[in-house]
Image (cartoon, rainbow, N blue to C red):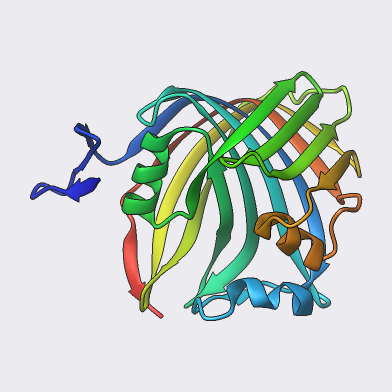
Length: 235
């Protein structure tokens, strides 16, 4: 149970979280797809969000993250996000977010409105390769994925910022994220995905056109970020 305290911090499972919440060590892999906006529209129906679209296509991101240290402890995470807009803001709408620990699940739901649910994820992100085998807590197969990038690594640490969008009731929660990524490798069409049968997350991905090759892949060996408190904006 997560409880908002008088000073704006949160109590989650008897632990206090203050803003910004900091992730100090993580490794991430992403595959980027361009899906038909018309087919993906059902994923934002009733949320108050509008999909960002160019020539009838919307970016969809399939992400795999291993968190090693930070305020939310260590765990694995798989994400399905689409680029969306709301009242002039453009950012990722995270539609599915299975995680492997209850603490981060409760914190993510309460603090930022993120759709975290408990799952089992076997992730291995090493060098230019990443693999994932994801099942739910009832051991139903959701997806198995393999990503690959080019061997060359960018010898820089790159800063960035984004605003995550999360519908909650009659509002949209906007959460500012500031990140630094290093050990970055890019790839082109370097991913294969096998979807499970009969799981809602797998069915949604199938409905928007997966599995197929992504337009790009990315692996970041070193990722750290700060996440601010969510701001509720009317729909």
